[in-house]
Length: 474
Image 1 (tube, rainbow, N blue to C red):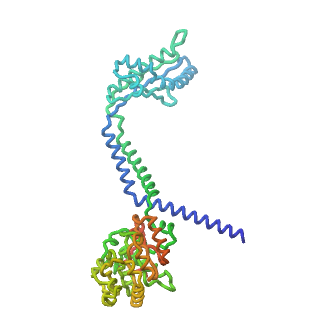
Image 2: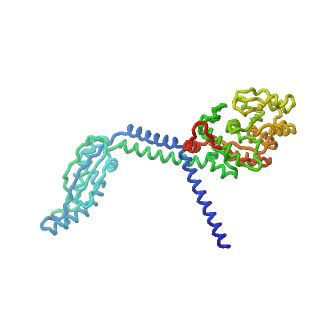
């Protein structure tokens, strides 16, 4: 039994490591797909730089003379074969001699060329063809005529130098000789710059640079981008991933109701997942907050209220953001009367609750902005108000200020059943998210889960499972 237990543990560890690796690879692929424009831009810039470089570069022409190496005599077949082998062995050495100072200096003197020895040596290249006795001497220069003159002069100088070098010490016929079989002629087209090759190389280098920049940026990036990162940073459940599109930010009362857009389906998924949380004691009073502003908490509050009302629930939206309220503005209702009037006992709840254009959805706006929001929301009066509201409605959705700069959300959560934290992909930082979760839990708040707002990955996911008008996931 102990062996089985060890095997089970080892298998679990191996599986966990495999899943972690797979998630890591998926995350890097996701980063590259999100930042494809950076990679493409770097590729285009690399190609553009090399095109400009090629256009501004001085054209260089190349000309080559061909020499034939002869060794020994052709008296018989055996001596001819041996001479051929000797020539093949010599041709490599002659290629090295072509750029020697002695050969080049004599070539410049005999050819009357007005360039330095170092410049000429840099312009000359000699090469032999494998298993042949042919030697090629080429030269490059911005002037095609000069390139041809240098190649011919070096070929003639090398031929003369080899004749002297191969002459026997006792006199007689040279053991080997070089014969010019093809003189260099001025070229009509330049060999440099190679614009097409340079451009392709620039694009390729730019693409590699772009990938490197994206990966480096990913290593240095401390923002949350995916649901996998949320689960890695905390043990919170990701209740929904809302696609990154204009439906989410350009909110109206008709954004979700009766629609089948990717964003509306994501909020219906949120509604479904909430129904599975604490089945025996479902959350009826739900606080919605975020780490910082502009991360989508108010949008999530309103759309959650809409989908709950769509499912037949009597829903009350409470704008408990007593600093920068927006719910009434979004729904086109009056923000001047509401929660603060009830808390200071200036009006009864029934008188300040407003009906919306959506059936079964009401609003308790913020009312006048007080100087002490946290004290009001933490009062026993607030506790009684939220208790009364939950007796009148199936669901109470409470929009609160962000957690990092303010304590309002944590204070309000003590009167509610649970809290949803909204994270905006590419905006919320990982330290802020972790601090938000820890802060809420220190306040004994029941964090129901996280909504990832502005998720690029969700675009494709909901695009594949696109429902028809009027359909629902529950």
